[in-house]
Image (cartoon, rainbow, N blue to C red):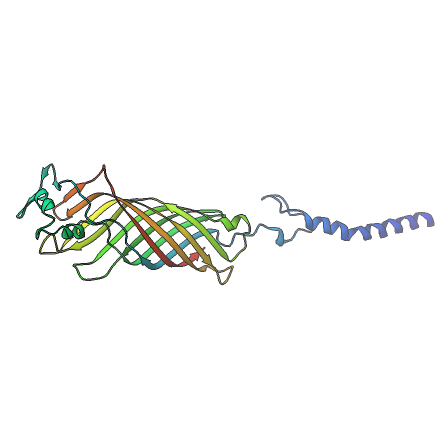
Length: 275
C-alpha cells in the first residue's frame, strides 16, 4: 500500500508541473468559429479586431476648385424642338459668323466656354468601408463662384465612387488611412451667367458626364473614436455634349459627335465620421 500511495503522489506532482504548459497551449489557439464553444485558456485578445476605418462613414469636404476648359468651341446651330431657332438679331449662324452681336470674336469665346466655375468646392459623401480594404460611396459635389449675376458660375454632379485602401493590406489598426478612388457622374452640369449674348443676363449651361478621381488621406486623433480629419486631392474630367442657350425656353444644341472637355482640380479638407 505504501508503494501505491507513493506512485499516486508522484503522478499528481507530474500533472501539476504540466499545467502551465497546457495553459500556454490553450492561449496559443486561434479564435474559434462562431457557434463553437470557447476552449479553456482562450482570451478576448484573440478575437479579430475591427479595422479602424471599417463600416459606415459620412464625409463633408470644403476647399477650392480650379476651372479648366476651352473657350469658343464651334457648336451646331441651336435647336428648339425640330426647327432652327431665330432671335431678333438673326439666326444663330449669322451670330456665329460675326463673332457676337458687337462683331467681336472674343465675345463669342467668352460667351460659349467651359472654362467657368472656379471657386469654393464642397462635397457630401455617404458610404460603407468593407473590412477596411475597399469602399462604395455616393458623392454629391459642387464648385463655383459667388459673384454678381453677370459672372456667377458653378458645376455639380452626383457620382457613385469606389475606393481602395492600400494601408489596410499591411495593418488594420492604424489611426491613419489612405484611399485611392474613382467614380462616374452620369449627369454633370456646368452652369453660368453671361451678358454678352443678351443685354439681360440669362443662364447658360453645359451638360454631360464626368469622371472624378483622386487620393484621400484621413487621420483619427482617437483610434477608437468616430471623428477623422483628412485631405482629398480630387481631379474631375468633364465631357459635355449639350450646350443650353436658354434653359427657360429649352433652346439648346447637342454635340454628340464632338464633346467639349474640361479638367478641374478640387482639393478639399474632409471632416469624416465613421460608425
